[in-house]
Image (cartoon, rainbow, N blue to C red; front, side):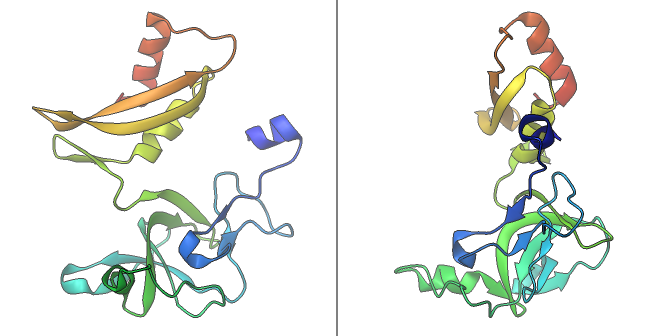
Amino acid sequence: MWGVDAFDRPFHDNWWQTETGGIMIANFAASEIRPGSMGRPLPGIDAALVRREAGGAITVVDTVDTEGELALLPGWPSMFRGYLGDEARYRACFAGGYYLTGDLAKRDRDGYYWFIGRADDVIKSSGHLIGPFEVESVLLEHPAVAEAGVIGKPDPMALEIVKAFVALKPGFAESDALRTARARSCGAC
């Protein structure tokens, strides 16, 4: 919980998009803060997790700790009304009565949401779907890593391979030993 270590205060993570016009899910000051969680929907915001089905239908994901696409019931005051000059893109954001955010998340038994990544942000390597966010999260757990960014790099055999960009914390220098430690900790790097 580095927020407490660095600032002597926990972070109150939240979730929003430009399209939502404001924060939709947050860790409230009066509630338990779960580090890494986006929190719970604000009062008046109806959030759900859904799966897109063939033909454009959706299925609501009711099971705990199961990945789905974060969706919101329309009608909040700051809701966006369109993409400039792209009505088809705007319409494609809605299905089954929900605004589909394109963000993947899980919900725990107490209603806290946990961000996983973008539905359209995956690396396809040898038939496996790899989320850059998860790889970055693992890299950031290493005590030498200050920042990490992960992309898919074209590869003639695997289609894509994982490529990580890492910034080290002060006091650490690039070395073969550190490079090996990163590869072991992440498995895909």
